[in-house]
Image (cartoon, rainbow, N blue to C red):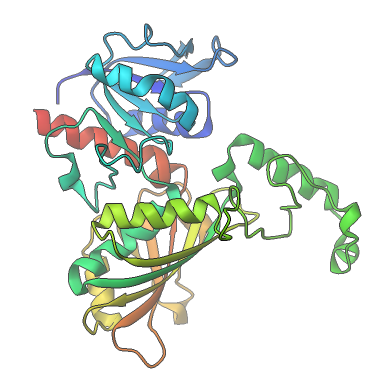
Length: 346
């Protein structure tokens, strides 16, 4: 791979910093690294390859001459620069939701649908972190047995809401420390709440991520369902999701019920998963081996376990998958896309 000029947009955030670490770890051929962020964060410094680089404010001028943009910014920011930068010759890999459902923009998990990168598109969207953790596990089984129906229940870490989400959990845990008795019969009016989650997240779970629509689905659930259909190339897939925020720092978990076109045993499923890229099978409950978010934190692979047959069915399986939402669920997936695009271009 030739050395390229790389910009990381949102370089001071959790995902942006993870992108910098992964570029360094994987020895990505960076000729020059350009860290960009909002004007509020400009002037701060980020570490890359032993140097402290000053963060510049994001602008089209700052992206001039950049070969590759890895963006960890939000959707509104992405809409403000991605198309113009791509038209000027920059390959833009965007983590936000801005372009995921655009029919002209590929939505890519490299282990699942790398063929979507054929033709070296200038804009590529990175899926939602929950979608990635689910589909890295489900896609190999779909290729083996033909997916007919998918039901997902997610358990999502507070870091998915950014640094504010992490800070809110830490603050609430401190406030509630030593109140074990009170928490068994809490006074709702006395419980701490914050701007990020609305309700108490410490010692609690919240079945709401993003706003509710008129049918009762949250934005996160709608994203997960729509993205799953697009990535798998199954526009009519019967899929339902319930997305829940849990008081975990890093690591999303997804409980999966998958129904297939033919019978598939847990034993066959484990063999398929063990051979699949990006998957590590952790499935020996008698020895205490099963996935958890803490064990997935910092890992590149999605951990998959608890594989079992649905009651009374030989064509349906349940499983549990966990992945680092900042790493494979965001930063690593973007860097993997960049690696494939650069390899494809020689």
